[in-house]
Length: 171
Image (cartoon, rainbow, N blue to C red; front, side, top):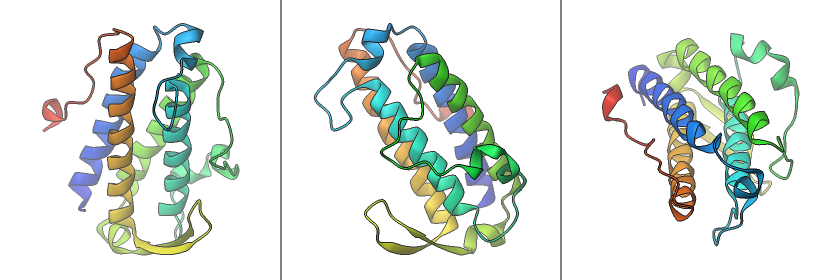
């Protein structure tokens, strides 16, 4: 991964989430929590999973040097994957927008040397892992895209029009 790609994917993430959230804002409480057949059974659960994953990847990939975005009190928290970071659509959208701003700040602060550096972290299964930061960020962005696709499928099944995944407008 290089700096240009990191910044492009951060912008794509923010843009895709804004478009997706425009669809999610229209959901009733019942639709937000409606269960489907996937591992993450509802849009609320999927949004929670993506949010918690992004939060933890931001903490992992910003180890080793002082990034300005990490000065936010948000990052003093420890959020486990079993926690529920929000209940309502509005709470989710507000927190998602804040986290996406932090991802943009990380991309703006990232250097080529940072991307080449490795970080060691504990996985959700408790295993210790050492990975390249650039590759880890690429994984984070790919993970978001994968799960936004699942949300799109859930919205489709509710007959809610959605089209938020195109990268073409940004390249």
